[in-house]
Image 1 (cartoon, rainbow, N blue to C red):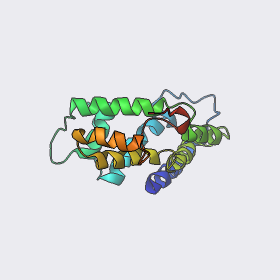
Image 2 (cartoon, helix red, strand yellow; image 1 turned 120 degrees about the vertical axis):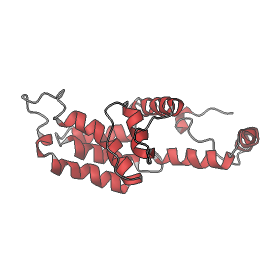
Image 3 (tube, rainbow, N blue to C red; image 1 turned 30 degrees about the horizontal axis):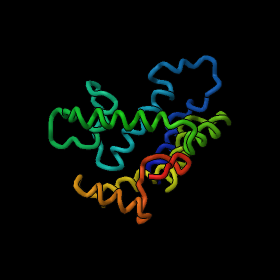
Length: 179
């Protein structure tokens, strides 16, 4: 995550015009402006950091491209698993529609100073790095790994009810109800 934060922040040096956020002459809908570039950059950066450089395929969706850049091997043309692509699409939507959380608040606060969008995104990613925000996703993966198989779910839920663990990924503490 530290590599991602640093790389996103460094993008502002590649696109010096990105700090013209108040310029009335900028058409933010054009692909050469920083808003679309800012939205597209994370998937390429993450794929590069995690795996290796695979360039986007214009025939694929945003999510299909993310999967392509993460998992393409020797295939001439990568075809994402439709079920996995849809599941990841839903996950991306849920993350994007997570309201006024820590990273959203950081992005808005930093952006309000009229800094370039890459610097604001780096600040938001840094907020996401914390174990009480984005780190919670990692805890869900650890929990699923401990559960291991579907048949182990009832036993795991019973241990949570007995106070022997936490059920991760179902909202903030303010959303929790007694099981």
